[in-house]
Every structure is written in structure tokens, then in C-alpha cells.
Image (tube, rainbow, N blue to C red; front, side):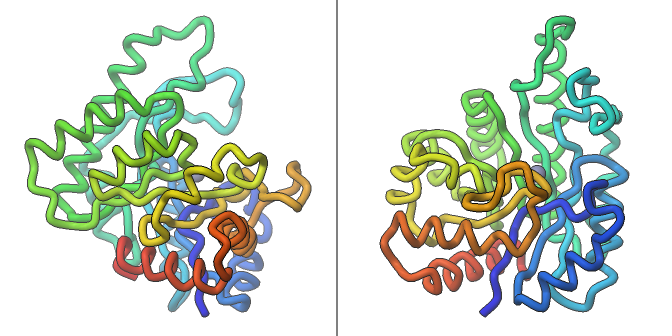
Length: 273
Ligand SMILES: [Zn+2]
């Protein structure tokens, strides 16, 4: 049985030395993955990895909102990029690219010297361009959203009002809102992405219990967010996605095989794998 890590970053520098080893190890364990880009370089690297493997490795391409402005606390992980529609359109046309992401809004990383108003404006403008790209290419979105669910919903509701969305629209990845907020995204036919954060406390048990299994995707967000019981500061990797399935199985009081079977089905349907 195949398990799919729908959001991982073997394409990031944390795996620069052993990315292929990590991928091969995962494939041997029947764990497939989507490597998600966050800017030009990591999007390209996600494509390169995907095209190198016959099966089981896929790519998403996008410009993460934290790469639109400079953030001191993130130092070298934060090269700033100017959005270029044509460049990302070309990326989406590459073989094995199954989604647009990660893209979205991030109001969490603002610092004292930031012009918050204009950064929010820029993030919204770029995100709307990615919605346009999704509409043009019919590729699903992998949405990152931190401290900005209200603004995100406003933009998405507008988008749904003005466009015919006749394709799988994608996922709210690393969802950390309430069950009530989740339902607003489910109404728009988004899936909810669950990762290691759900293993750190019982805060998300209500969401997991209530959210139908057909609407959930599992992910690691490796190298970050290592799930319990592994040490929090150890490097996360795609095979640990099985621990996310285990957590969901425990909360829903069902067999882990059932969680894996259904979430794999969900992932294959959203990403046309
Ligand atoms: Zn990510």
C-alpha cells in the first residue's frame, strides 16, 4: 500500500547531501512524495528530482509569501524574489509538476521595521496571480497561510464568485485553524493538510475527529515539524508521514490502513497522480 507525503521539501538545503538517499529509502518503504518549491531555485530542484524518478516523486512549483520581502530572523533561508508569471507558467508545464505551491499569505513573520501594509498588499497581489495561474492551467493549489485565514477566505470567496472552478482546487496545507474555520475551506472544496503539528498537542483532535477522512491529506513538511514521538529538533523526512496517519487513526479510532488507503486516494485524485 502506497502512502503519499503530499508536502515535503527534499528539494531544500537540509537534504543537499543526501536527498537521493532519502528519496530512495522512502520509495522502498512505499512512501511517495510531492516536493514543494518555495521560490525559483527550490521549484526547479523539485522538478529535477521528480523527473529523475520514474514513479513516486512529484513536484509543486510556487513562490512562498515569505520570499516576497526580507526577514532578518530567517537569514539565509530568505532570498527575496520578484514574482514573474511567465516563469511560473513555464514551470507548471514541465513533466511531473502536479500543483502550484506553496503560495499564499504569511502575516506571522512581520518585524518592527516592516511596512506591514504594503507587504500585505504585495502578498495578496501575488497570491491572486497564482490563482489566475491555477485557473489557466487547471492545476491545484498548495496554500500556505499563517495568521491570515480571514484575508485568505476573502480572496478565495471572490475568486470562486468570479470564476468557474471545475477542477480539483487543492489543499490548505499545515492547517492550524479551528474546525469552524476548516469548514469554510471545505465549502470551497479544499482539502485540509495535516502534519506533525497535530502530534504536539490535543489542540487539533477536534478538527481531526470532525473532518471527514475524504477531505484530509497527510504531509510532513520535512525537514521541519518532526512528529512525535521523534525528537522535535531532529530532521523530519517523508517516511515519517506514516506517523501522521497513525495520529489520525488514533483520534478517529479507526485502523491506520484505512487512513492511508483513503488519504492516498484523496492525494491521487487532487494531484492526478
Ligand atoms: Zn512547506
